Length: 207
Ligand SMILES: Cc1cc2nc3c(=O)[nH]c(=O)nc-3n(C[C@H](O)[C@H](O)[C@H](O)COP(=O)(O)O)c2cc1C
Image (tube, rainbow, N blue to C red):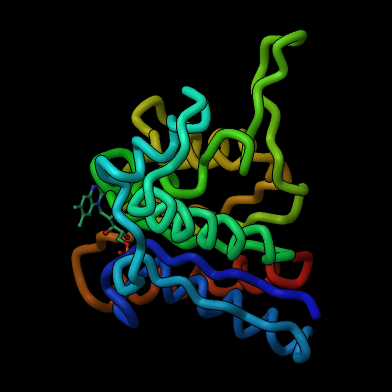
């Protein structure tokens, strides 16, 4: 069975603009693929592991040739489980607002969990470059922001997401960006948002 993992990085639930465009995408996708499994990972509601002192020590223990303590092993199991969840997904949908020119901190926390040496990337000493470990698969980004133009030098959301997922092996990255979500009236906001529903459905048809 094909599994689609929907990672959502807005805390706003049903009110989220990135979430509503993602919903239009998923409704279209599910109609065309009724047997596919859609797994939701709402980062602000999920019980994500912290990446604190135990996890950072566990990350470097094998590099230093040290055995993990039981606390480090327990913490590392949770990190590996999150990477496994991503690896199991045949396709990934990531919806996220821009926060302060980049990504919300929960999405950064998630990335700090899933980007790990050996598990999701390696280093090729001969070629002196990083190599992604994950099999390539489609990643659809649905990104929103109030004002930052796609392609602007102040956009640290799209370039970072594209780079970090390519870094771990996911190179088939597509993006749909709504960049003027803050409109003066509720009607304007709704009209702007709904204008992205058809492009989202079109993206779902080729996902
Ligand atoms: C903490 C915070 C920081 C934000 N920073 C930016 C920003 O740097 N640039 C921008 O264009 N919009 C910024 N915004 C606006 C959001 O990106 C925009 O409202 C987005 O559509 C929200 O998506 P959501 O409804 O899915 O959460 C910010 C919003 C918040 C709450």
